[in-house]
View (spheres, helix red, strand yellow):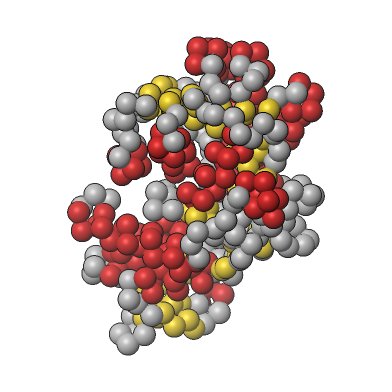
Length: 346
């Protein structure tokens, strides 16, 4: 294992970037975290993690779509590891502006790989990729050998980035690795994602501040991992001498309906489900109140029916092991949102 004295983390304000910074700082690394130009205020995630003013954290502006800017920052910092988490992270947004998604996720990765190749060739580059690169796989679970067939603009942009990592590793000998991340959630998730949308709505419903929540495809199944576990594996990837790609996942799939049931249960609300399709509702047992409704507006144009990962390689090489189950994950997220609601910090 190689020590990480200085790390560059793009997208430091997001869930994964903030968690990476906190973990690296706790291990004694100096961290430079990037944020979008013009948005230099420390994110609420850094505040909640208690590292917004940490001596070992320096924050700088960077647009990864700017190749010259990427080259300058890598040349100046000479990082031991570069974690690339910045980019367009919402599948729904990619349908509205696919070219922006390609630029934010694909070209930004090329720019940073080239910056590392030119100015810090000994650094270990770790990409936060996505299981969306598998598209709608014919078999489950998916591992590092599963054929890649992205079906969404977001998936395609991540496939571009993932393929670039492999190409730069093979063509130029870079220590470049790709973390193929299946869904990974936490208390720091953005509420544009269905898990945080649910945990926040459940907290508001439990406190009498909302009546219900509207969701999309309740049958969509995902491998819901805990983001701190995935981040720990990414740090372990960067510390390895040899680069490699890893699927990071729990190996267990659950539907959106199951996650919703677990989230309401975390607040002491038991849901009963009735109806089918767009008419399906989640009803609170005892009160009869409809707490979950379905709206076609929240369905994706293309929705992978089952994404669940096989992390055997990561378990073997990195010691990766999920630390919470679905109920535990939902409970942590709901409890965090209950605390925020009570403190008026949401």
